[in-house]
Length: 357
Image 1 (cartoon, rainbow, N blue to C red):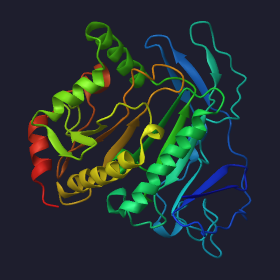
Image 2 (image 1 turned 120 degrees about the vertical axis):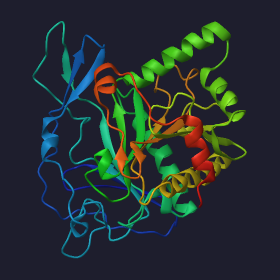
Image 3 (image 1 turned 90 degrees about the vertical axis):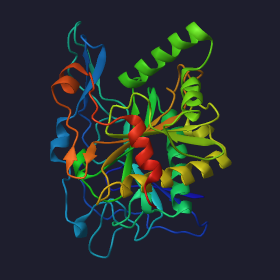
Image 4 (image 1 turned 45 degrees about the vertical axis):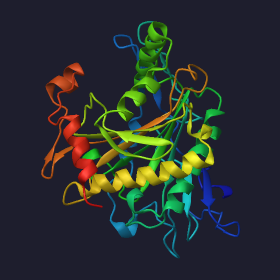
């Protein structure tokens, strides 16, 4: 893999990842861009003991441009984009409308009950391909493998930033999910706190270890590998529908070896992840008459805490409960956080196993 770094016109970093060592890119950005906003705030919710990010400047971010105006496509003569080069394999760059910024400042201090601090951190966009019509599911294995290398690279680099406590790699796909750019891409957030979901997961893992002496996630994987909810597997990975799935279509991908982060996966595990993930995504897309909307969320250990408790895995889920129906988070889910699912996990696993590829 060849790695090339440069700066965009407003100072943001951009990193190209190429399969070929002789790949070359245009590194200068000819655009005249305004400064990136650094006004994000973090406000602490004392009721839930959670930090909430306030980023009002994001109201003006790009929203559903036509394909010929996509800002994630390579630049062409007379039409510069967020990617100055006229070609690329995989590219990452700092978000132009970030929720979190390493340069964030605020004059607001809040109160003893609701403290406020700058929205420090970093938000990056990761483009999986220069092909606007592609999706992760249609990537060639070697292209998908390059994305895995980019995830690992960015996880390492962002974890080293001062104040960063957790790195989250994810993909939102589909208008139903709220995607505002249709180009195949994901995002990476470097948070200045451990997120609520990770905190709760690790608290459960800690209680399980105190009670049994074992790792919670390893025990879940062992039970699922022996059951009926397995969708697909390789020598080093298993994909399964969890027993208490919250979403209509939900699959978790676990490596068989406990590791804390993407960076800890060896070459064989990275290769096999690509094979399994592409298989599962194709099963998702074959369920209905159109590509399925989904969220793909990597769960990595926090940067500085509980790395022995954590267990790297990917959670993949969709709001689509039928070809023409979506799962909405209504009163019970939104008001109480108590999910009610319409499809049995065992039935979903059977459908995904039997789908024609």
